[in-house]
Length: 202
Image 1 (tube, rainbow, N blue to C red):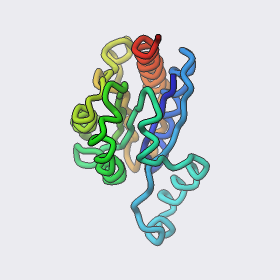
Image 2 (image 1 turned 45 degrees about the horizontal axis):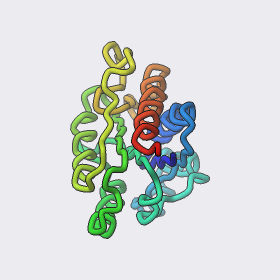
Image 3 (image 1 turned 90 degrees about the vertical axis):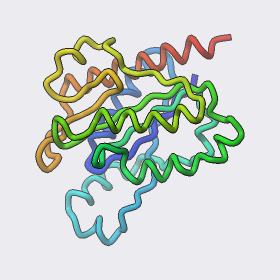
């Protein structure tokens, strides 16, 4: 089974969650690719802001996803930081280009999932996850949430929701992804892969 984790990350938190999700999925035997969506922030702005530049440098070796390739995978997990309770423009721009795939039903019955993050504890993570699910519904994808498969979802003092994994980046987005957030993401990846395996077996 083939899984794509496609994400956008400004400072690297979503990238870290993507790697944990991939690790969990690989435990079940999934062939996982991690790719990022194209950056929309002008290069001049990135170059003028050290933190933005560092985020770009961190992810420079991550390949950029092509919209058409989504049809090649059995499962697709989308990740984006929250922007005022919605996905980032970079991810929205990418998803908005999937119209030709929708018209041909190319993503129907593929497994889908979402993950997110924000600077503050109540920064719109859950609304971002829910709004990210809506395009997947239009595509006829089978959405797999995190649920409470990870007991940490019920006790976390940072990120992690029943809708999908999340991370709290803290003030100035300087807080690293913690071990609880990592475990929830890893368990989520394993769950996505297990369900995909059931749905794709002969």
